[in-house]
Figure 1 (tube, protein in one colour):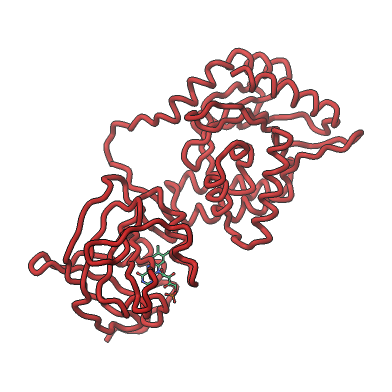
Figure 2 (figure 1 turned 30 degrees about the vertical axis):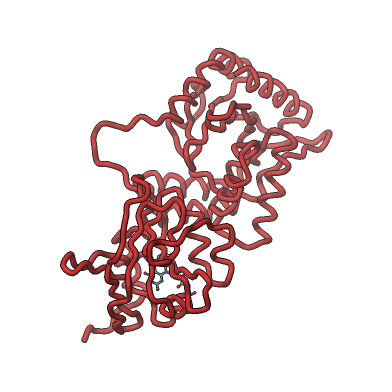
Length: 379
Ligand SMILES: Cc1cc2nc3c(=O)[nH]c(=O)nc-3n(C[C@H](O)[C@H](O)[C@H](O)COP(=O)(O)O)c2cc1C
C-alpha cells in the first residue's frame, strides 16, 4: 500500500505531467447524449485493441455514461477549449449548442474533434477513488489532422515543435505589414507628443507589439515582440469588432467566472465599443503587481501557474480601466489605447500610447484621442 501523501503535493507533482483532453460520450440508457471530459485517456493494448480512462468513482457523469452499451472517446482539438469548458461543467446542458453525429455504434462523435474511438465496455475496475475503465476498440478514425488540445498545470495549450526554425505566423506578418503603413505618422506623433507609441496586434490570445516608436528618455519601454495574454478586463479594444463567439471566449478567460464579473467586463467592453478607446490609470499598486506577474510569466516560459497569477493580477485592474472623462478634471494615465479598424482576415489591432505626462487635463486627452483615431484609421 502507498504511504500517506499530501494531496496538494500529489496534485502539484502530477500536474507537471501534461495530458491531452478527451470527451467521453455515449447515448445513455434514457436516450439522451451524455459526456465527460477526461485527461486520463490512454492507449493500453494493440492486441486485442484496448484503451482506458479513469473516471472518479463519485462522478455523476460517469454514472450516466456507464448505463450505455458503447462509448466514444473524442480527442479535442486545440481550438476546442470552449467546448471543453462546457463539457466539464456538470448539469444537463452540456450538449446545448454542441453539434454531433452518431458513430457506427451510435455514440456521439462531436464536430471538429481530432479523432474518435468508439468502444464497448470491457471492464470497469475500482482503483482507489477512481475507476479504471477498459474499452474494447470497435471503430476509430482521425477526423481532422490538426493540433490537439493539451492540459498542463491546470491550463490549456497546444503542442509547439522543438524545431529551431521558427514557424512564420501569418497573423503576425499581416499585422506587421499593416503597422508599417502608419509607421511614419506614429513616429512623428511620438516626437511631437514626446511619448512612446506602439502598435499592438491580437495574435491568438496575446496582444503582441508589432511596432514601437519610443522616446529615448523612457525608462523601460516595452520591447518589440512583447506579448501580453488577453485576459479581461485587458484587451477590450481588440474585442470591439470581434464576433460574439470571440467575445465569449475572451470573457471566459477571466479568472472570476461569476455572472457579476462577466457583466462588469461586458459593460466595460460596451463602453470601449462606443468610444473606440480605453484608458488605464497610472501609479496604482494593482498595476505594479500586474507588471510583476507579467514579468514572472514571461521568465517562466509562460507556465500555466504563472498565467493564473497574471489572470489574478489582471482582474485586479478592473477598476482602473475607464473611458469616461469628466470636464475640467486631470488624470494620471498609464496608457491610452485606440482601436485600429482592420479588414476581415486581418487580426484586431490597436495603437497604444505610454510614457504620458502626469495630470493630463480632460481636454488634452480628448484632443490626443482624436489625433490617434485619425492615425489609426489611415492604416
Ligand atoms: C482537462 C480536464 C481533465 C479531466 N480529467 C478527468 C478525469 O480524467 N477523470 C475524471 O473523473 N474527471 C476528470 N475531469 C473532471 C470531469 O470532466 C468533470 O468536470 C467532473 O467529472 C464533473 O463532475 P461529475 O462527473 O460529477 O458531473 C477533468 C476535467 C478537465 C477540465
